[in-house]
Length: 283
Image (tube, rainbow, N blue to C red):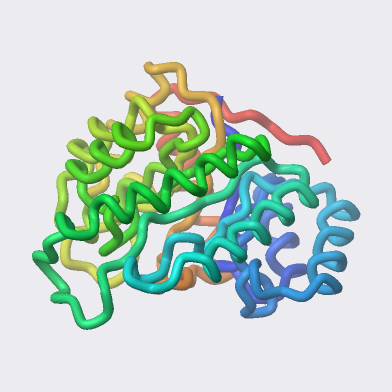
């Protein structure tokens, strides 16, 4: 059974607009990445309190903290980033979600755009991931690793290595088929490498060579095949809309209030086509 959520900052920077659009589509969860054009980890305590109160008034919950943890170059200092990770844990507990999205580091600055050799840095990636996982285990937090463009875990092979090396039930996959397409990998190979660890789905489709996303089922992300297989495997959890229909980049994407409902309904059609059941959330 799938529960729909959304990176609502793709709708608008205004949190009230975000919630109003999602309510119209009967989606009651948010993957909290930003409001007011400010990343979740950079918001003040007052801004956090105000948004928390807004969610409670409007009957919304979080599917995860959509943090940028792990989106720094692997040769950058680790300790300051670890302090941000502790902030993400604090916010997860405040908002009542055990889930935090993370990444597995960029190459050093100045590295080639394609064909970077990760082998000299592989052990440092794994070490940093293990440190965060050990903290997560103690704090009762689930870490969802997204297969983002240019990070260590953007390829099916390195993803398989990452999960095998860390070996923790507190590190699971936030599977994003579009990111494999964007990186010129086979999304089915990515699914094969990730499916045993997948506990979170990001709903974004893409066509090879394009600069922005496609509606679910209309790209090259094998959306119906993958969601269908997830359903057959008994997947039950969040499916978070991240359409990127008007563009996207390292800090997020843009879809807009007009197109976002279309993205939701396109994925609901995918669900119907593969026999997936939606968990209906009542306000």
